[in-house]
Amino acid sequence: MVFTRRMAALAAVVLIPLGVAATSFALADSPEPPEVPPQVELDSASPTPTATAPSTRPEPSDEVVSGPPVTDSPADDDDDDDDGDRDPSDDGSDDDGPGDDG
Image (tube, rainbow, N blue to C red):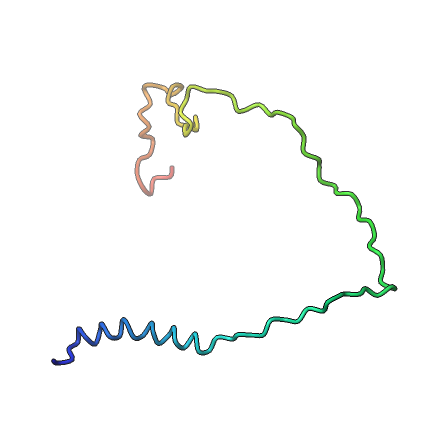
């Protein structure tokens, strides 16, 4: 059986990840668990904790806030595109084209 390009590609797809995993496993650090002393003694001259200043954040309350007013318009309507107050004789063609600024 001839070793074809297809078999070489399949071998690479399988062997490269296996090689990465094996290298990662071989180089992995397995440290000893730290030794914990059976009892911890504090120095008798250690400073005592001081009381902190009270927080300046406001306390939460149970106040109920009313919701936004109910409208009949769609939620995405920004009300600046209404044409109700426009002059019917104005067709909006005041621009004479590029270069005419006068």
